[in-house]
Amino acid sequence: MTTHAATSVEADHTTEADTTTQAERTLPADHPLRDGRLDGAPLLRAYRGLPTAAHPVWFMRQAGRSLPEYMRVRTGTGMLQACLTPDLAAEITLQPVRRHGVDAAILFSDIVVPLKLAGIGVEIVPGTGPVVDHPIRTAADVAALPQLDPAALAPISQAAANCVQALGRTPLIGFAGAPFTLASYLVEGGPSREHLRTKALMHAEPETWHALASWVAGVTGSFLRAQILAGASAVQLFDSWAGGLSLADYQRFVAEHSATVLASVSDLPVPRVHFGINTGELLAAMRDAGADVMGVDHRIPLDVANQRLGGRTPLQGNIDPALLFAGDRPLHEATLACLEAGRSAPGHVVNLGHGVPPDTDPDVLTRLVAFIHDQP
Ligand code: CP3
Image 1 (cartoon, rainbow, N blue to C red):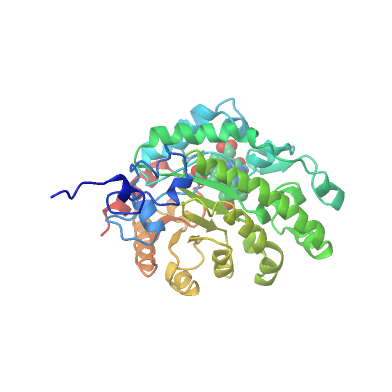
Image 2: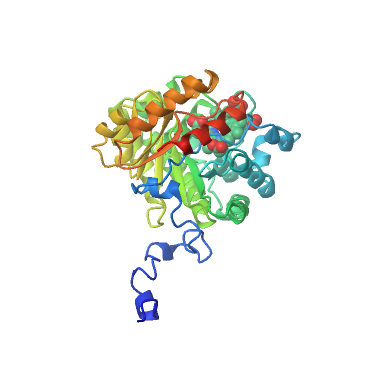
């Protein structure tokens, strides 16, 4: 019998012996999705709607101020400087994987990094968030936006490559900010509760708005693509502030631009997660922009989200981060409810409903990961 004779003829087709698909061949030969090291990775199985032996879990903002080892290595280095120093960004990315045993790393970076690399004057102010030197508010401002030189993304690619080399069988997630959320920082000049100027611009000068959102889509799409080509095996598009929009405005002003970003990596075989805060009313529209998986915040249960999505989209989420401060018993009860609701979906990756708060006790997260992995 020659059952193991994977001939070169068979290898040109997708057979049991050679599962390299046509799509995987769009990735570099040394990409983790091509050499078998991620075969069976629970995160990727759940993102694809396949059953897993244990529940996969990672946390948004798992790297960062909740970890003393992060505070140590960040001393004396600004946030964006840290993102652009590949060895440091890789070290910070790996810290929560080592400590908590989560099922994925997410590249340590920030949604405003590609704006910075394009030449926009932006800094991240501790305790505040991104602040832009010269807000973009007029047609002339938009026309004067710089082009992103793809070579400027080299430190991001290098950081991602360093991560995957160390990660072995744990997948790296890449991410980017969606056009609405990034445009809001550019128009408002900083964090904003109501996004008044941004929404006013959409309605007052739709052409200027669409030109701005198109520019952002190009820049943030390049950032996402660079991370995948350097080794990321899944990506998440954060439209953190989209929940401030009505469904009508989302569809009229935003969906097409998020769709451009998601489509810019659709030739690459990586699951695309799409997430925003307070987006219960937008879930289907955000999925229809081209997402494979929907991230859900803690304001609606996962079985309700699944229903709104017609039962065909894997989900990620959605333990309320506040429960991290409530003690293990309430946290574990909430977690069990989350797992139960998640069973209704075709796949479920456990996460919080939003990022890890900076003052979280990291031991609570380590215990939570073990608890989740122990559940049937
Ligand atoms: O672990 C991870 O999740 C990966 C790293 C990551 C960061 N920012 C690091 C970071 C990710 C995925 C982001 C995305 C991001 N950045 C979003 C979308 C996700 C979300 O939270 O909704 C947004 C809106 C931003 C913009 C931004 N950057 C804010 C609002 C802040 C917080 C400012 C503050 O100090 O409170 C940042 C800074 C930032 N980004 C930090 C980290 C670890 C804190 C910086 C520090 O340590 O000083």
